[in-house]
Length: 338
Ligand code: KG4
Ligand code: ZN
Image: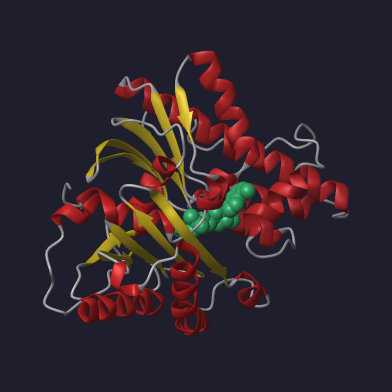
């Protein structure tokens, strides 16, 4: 079965073709980062308009790269939510129009389920059940994953998401958008021991997170500095990164202990963070659990994870009546089982 995946929930147009027998055949991505950079964040209206420009040419590119034609597609998976309503509507309407024209099912995919299952696109892939740490620009959650659609929320952020904390701290330090990669790059040149930042909720008995206090601690630190030279900014970045990574690793270990599982899966944009990966790998070696990451290019938003998640749900998809909605707000733990 050949599944076309369409991702358009935020500032990336991602298209992919996933074959249930042969795996991923082709994928294309257009990021709008440069377009939004001058505004310091995503401008929803610009995002929607750009998705309209990109979605069909990228689909044609994917089909050509895979040597397939529209008629070969068995189902169209699209991000139905959560995300920006206007941006979601672009992928959703294209997917449903194509499905209607081809008389094939359109499958609405939960964006976070796409992230959650994305490590299954790598080899070796984890087997169910596992604990997933989902850390993106909008979400920070620990989930127990017992199968496709069997998700139990173990803990989540009470305020900012991890990626959001990276982005806001980067902005505060005058780094570009998106802040995560920029902050992480500058942190490589910094000394993490010069400044000491708090590890919010690291020792709380639950599996929740809180990152807004960390951002405020950085703000206070910045204000205390007589001058914010390049080395000072790098040292603050290193201290911030170390604090947030300590918390993410600490809570992930606690979730493994609580569930008794031996597999940890990392998903979402912050999963691209090198220090997080190094620290998790070190903990895994020491404590004898396995840690799985999506391929680096599929950590941030992409079409491959949507095509893949859609393929997992394909057997249960019914032909719709041509009507559709988007779900800008949508809880992952209320999804039906596949
Ligand atoms: O999953 P994603 O592409 O989009 C959402 O669904 O939110 O995640 C984007 C987030 C941004 O906040 C970005 O700053 C962060 O992931 N990010 C990183 C890194 N690469 C992306 N954060 C820390 N280190 C990175 N290397
Ligand atoms: Zn995402």
